[in-house]
Image (tube, rainbow, N blue to C red):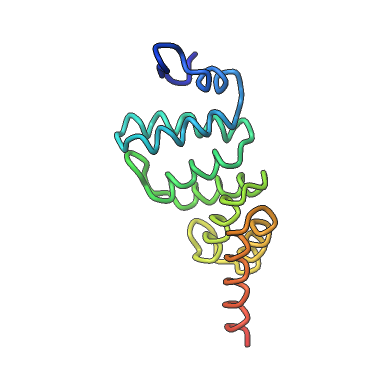
Length: 150
């Protein structure tokens, strides 16, 4: 069963074929492309299906982007912070830096999870090991936490 119907120069797109054959990163890339192309409900639904496939095939970024849909409540997605946090946790387990940052923010704000500053700090620390933006979040939060405890 095709994941989506997309034409590329009159032929079936190689990235669609790769996704259907189980390439997680291509499913995520294609899902993100659908999100960016238009905010129509149909495109968001197709994007979600592709991102779910990427996530299920162990692409952490797919889990993160799908979590973002539930965090914001975009299109027909009802805002669901708990589902978003669960998807960010899956991304965190796969070492996705953006997912680690998003999970840290969820713990910091108590969005879909209980506020847990040590878990937030650990999520930001893991993000820092993966990507520079994670370091800025780690140092910001760590400095903020030091001020609160002193």
